[in-house]
Length: 526
Ligand code: NAD
Image: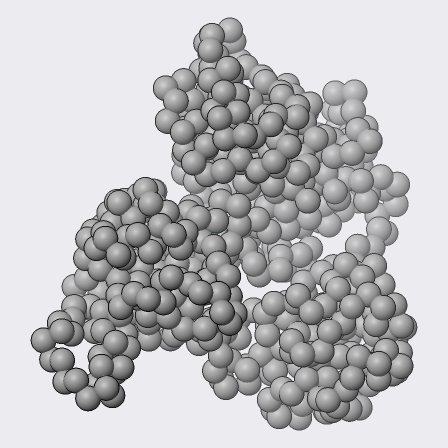
């Protein structure tokens, strides 16, 4: 096996790889040279300097694996790699400790005013009275997103004798208990109770601007908020107002809506915010670990084993089921639909296969694809058919599978029932020229999950549908297709809309506040 290290990575990773492969280190290789030589290699490791666009991948005739020594894979055309049957792996866990430590740095710097005091002291001002701080002991830490990084922040804050509360609707209560945090049902309660709020969620349609004016108003006027996750989760205009008007005590950011030089961010004018330039993951140790983790992935593959952090999974249909690829798409869409529409942490997921799909010897790949669809909208970890079962298990989701040979007139059907803390949610799908949902919570529908969508549960009384449509109209959101289903006249009903454009969060909040509406949410599909 021959591997190319195209960007500078830690020596330990290179040494390990040399034990199983002929390693070429060329960290100044140009795009032209790469295009000429890529065909020689079985594996390549890059960081962010080297780009692997479709033209390079097209020439990579021997390449089996691309390793990204880090997390983001923006520099790699993953779709082109998938089509060519090349695995892409990364090292998502390499930065968790480093980012958690940086979060602690921002917290301490903000509550003890270290950054502004440093500036003032070096200006020889000696302003002792100006920098009255706040102790962390006995304060409440509120973590939004209790994944790899959020949980490490909790561990560190415990050493400061803080109490920890968390909001993560996808985390089962038992897992939260093991992590030693009080898991809350609502983000609002966290915002009201926490002294230090720290965000560790992915940027998704649900989390975008999920901290805005309304949320700042709920916080204590002494509260501090930190974002080392992704820019755009906090609405920066609202943050500016909250800091300027003293609605909160202070903030710390490592990530921004617009990143880079000369963004003229007005937040930089304020003294009660600490800012760093997206460096939370930048330590030698994280880089070393990323190199070691990703080199180990290449080693595993070269030895004939399966790497752990595979981002893509070239699909191979050896099931003998002709429609397998169509139903893999159905499974992915159903998983994503249920994940985006279900409120509450999923404790159990029941998957029932009916018709021809139930006759296939193993439904394993379909089940894993359901889990991939389910976990992808709430994670940036690169969930795929290989790691989906393990990630689901880590989140405490019990998976049960059943076969039912009655197909109700469809070739094949897949039914998912999610059991959550707040009730059950079920969805049935099939393939009718494209993935199609034919039942939601027992109501018959005909929904093609694609683009921007909207789902609401409401009371089936005159005016409910109109009120929802009017609210969307007020926010300039046009409805493409509407589907409604109900149990009995005047009973509970469900509405699924295909939207021409994304509905803003404010529109959804106003719809949720309508007296006839039980719940409403937006969904997004590729
Ligand atoms: P993770 O996938 O391990 O954890 C994310 C957690 O957020 C999960 O537990 C998930 O259930 C939860 N979540 C998802 N949607 C949610 C919602 N709407 N409300 C509440 N919780 C929700 O991810 P991680 O590795 O801990 O990374 C967390 C964030 O940090 C990501 O956005 C990642 O991109 C970012 N990150 C930033 C840097 C940096 O340099 N600043 C470096 C690494 C990671």
